[in-house]
Length: 360
Image (cartoon, rainbow, N blue to C red; front, side, top):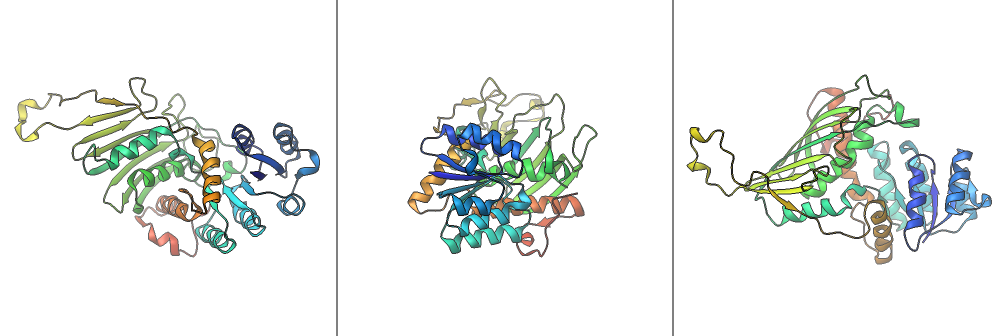
């Protein structure tokens, strides 16, 4: 599959390596306004200087390709992606899909009009452990799911345009966890409350910490806490998750050497417990370790293979632009809730004339 990629510096450089590692993909042109990043990426990808460009329009007019990877800054996504779609290319776009709901919805509309596949790189769900947990939930191993508690802490440093984002944590990091929530629960968010702030150890202008409370369509409630500025604390990029249901819990802690996924079955008859049992541990204190079967290609590699498979089959990807509108709406709702101090109905974001500003 012949690829043109726009945005090859920073995070974009990872896609150069990913495409090289995936069979059947080849970069045929690169686009970036940073000439140093452009030359460096060209050497890695084997793209000669005559196929390195500073504008998307020139690349599209001079090089034939099948697909377009959009790794430009989010405020540029609408222009670059719709240009590629109208040129007849399928598009794999980095998250967030766009800097406003109106822009994102228009990108989906253009993809439909051009009969092209638009997919978003929400790769966190494309690993063996999330796929395993989703199966455990669907199979009812902990009964009716009631609530989730999610904790994320890491010391993150952001650079470039991300340093001036109003909500860098929510829009650049938490959006992955919000998408995972939708994947695990199989439905969308209804309403959101949020609080955000920027601690002294942050290297950005915008808020790098957040508390978010979410209610989903199936009645499940989520308590989410996240920090992108926690020196010495490291939950891993996935964070720590606890799923509590009517018959037990699932704990997902990728940093747990004893078992990253543990299943706690609540088989005890709680009616038999009295006050004297207050400090008595319930059965299966340590839980049952669950080892996720490998899914093969994962993460960004899965992104590429899934995108191509959907193009060939003429079907919509799991993380299509259309589906990702729901993740983006949840993220914008959290931003608005933090800015206003109010409970935000997620459905209001779809019709809003304006969405919270990305930049400070």
